[in-house]
Structures are given as structure tokens and as C-alpha cells.
Length: 137
Image 1 (tube, helix red, strand yellow):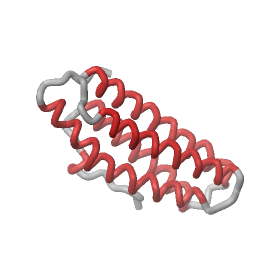
Image 2: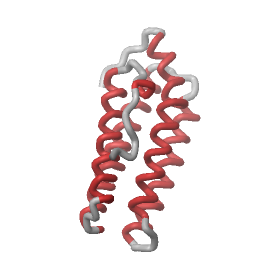
Image 3: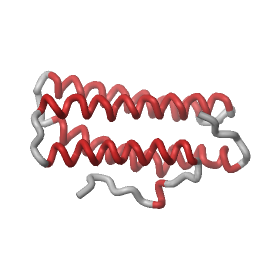
């Protein structure tokens, strides 16, 4: 059973970013399935790294597009990405240092943050794209 099920309401109608979001959800659910099936901690680390690396790639793509199109809420959106990155980095450090049951904590955090971020902050930049801004990645 997926931790976060893809729903039509997540589609922004911006093909590259929708594909990124779907890939993030797939990575999240794969990591969750592996966690639930009891994979060793050594295996969970690289999967979490891949998920965070892809999120970083996606953030960079969004931010580049926002800058190119003069998105009015760029600084606010950038700060959301930065807060996310700081938090997830802390969680990864805890996992590496074996301080907590961090894989489930990280995955739950990612699922909640991703769905909320797509439906609120990302939905706002969709209006810019709807006005004709080009999306080329």
C-alpha cells in the first residue's frame, strides 16, 4: 500500500513538473514499501539519498523556471525549499547517527510536505504558466 497515492488533484498541467512530482511520489512509495518489508538500514540510506537528490534536482528546475519568468513569489517559494532542505538534512544526519527510527519519520514528513507543497505553493506558480510562460527544462 502506498504512503502517498498519486491523485489527479496533484496535476498542475505543467508536464515537466507533473512528471517530477509523480517521480518523487514513486520514489517515496518505493522507499516506504522497502521500509515496511524490513530492509536493512544500510539499504534504506541510499534510497533516502536518491529521494532527497531528486527533490533537489526538482527544486533547482522549478527555481530556474521561476527566475526566468519573473515569478513574483520566488523568494517565498525559495525559502520553502530551503526550509525543507534544512529539515531533511537534519533527519538524514539523525538516521546516519542512528539516533531515531528516522526512515519512517523521514518518509512520513516527505509525504505530508510533498502533497501540501504541490497543492498550495506549486499550484500558485501554475497561474504564471497558464498566462503563457514557457516551461523548458
